[in-house]
Image 1 (cartoon, rainbow, N blue to C red):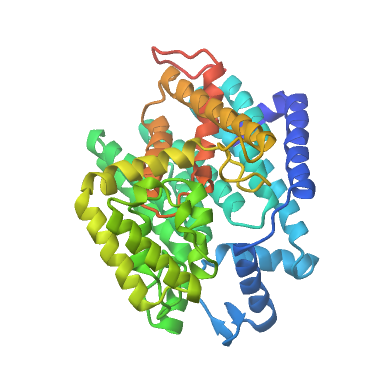
Image 2 (image 1 turned 90 degrees about the vertical axis):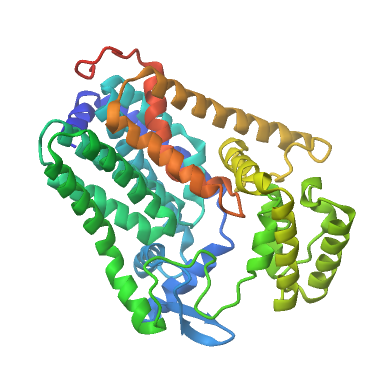
Length: 464
């Protein structure tokens, strides 16, 4: 971190103006394009009950009851801000997130500095400061800003730990910090554990090819213990309150004993690939009518399947709820579709979901239709969505160029392993939301910083 602070001191004017631009962009989103809805109020309710009654729970028709459907990281963040600025003061939450995300830009610059030198670090800082996709999520009280910050710190200290291990140094403090930031990330979102898997993969590779095994083993144990330690109080609380072993949060954000329509979810995974279907079908299963005409052609393998799906949708729309019998019928339909084409279910559809999350325009928080490609609906919205999609593609291409242009060794491999492991996991979800890849943007933006700097491909010290 001293090297990074030295870079800032040597380039004060650049970092002052870039920081002001970063903060201004984020505050524009906060005050002009904020989005407060949906899960925000779930987190907010938990935070309020925690503050007012000392119960980590929800207040609904059943009264106040404890819950484990959401991890405590973000509710604790909200409770801290509510305690200072007043309950349900979501504007204050978003302003604080703007400052946190601006600081994350500096961590991304540090990541590029460790891997590619000072010029790449400055470019990475500028790209992160002006990236509208991470800045956009500052303007909604959801977990993304904190999750991105935790991912950036984990990667930064992970890279420093790898470099210290390769230099024959212990670097125990650095590995401890990498583990703690990973643990904090898991307290914010359950998929934060993917960072631990990525660190484990890289440490395993170091162990295989290193002559000195014990420092690598020690580093691995430190990362594991420091990552899991923040989860211990939460796990103990869940065992004492619900008598279940739950160190994270359930995949479908349900409390013990709460019904989850697994058959419907399974059926959804047999055809869904894009965010538009998430908004138009998947999210509506709990309380809104579903329209069979909004399903794509790939949702049916035969006329019989179409008629059965139409019948199930009609049953759902009468009750606006999926009951046990209906869910069992969705499960039978899903099993038939998987048996009909296993390759589609296990390979092709996950690949398409991953591609959609990475490549679609990141306009889900803006007042733009998810069906941005249908120009007949609103030409202006479609053109704006295409512009955002193009910008997103340019970021991806710059990151790819940065990766191909630089020889970063095992330390740089951590970034790529994290992106690949997280992408593979996201392909298994039945709700492909573009926001789920935002935790990869610290790695992406750091690599993109190297795309505009000439590298030393034959090794040697990192250029300044």
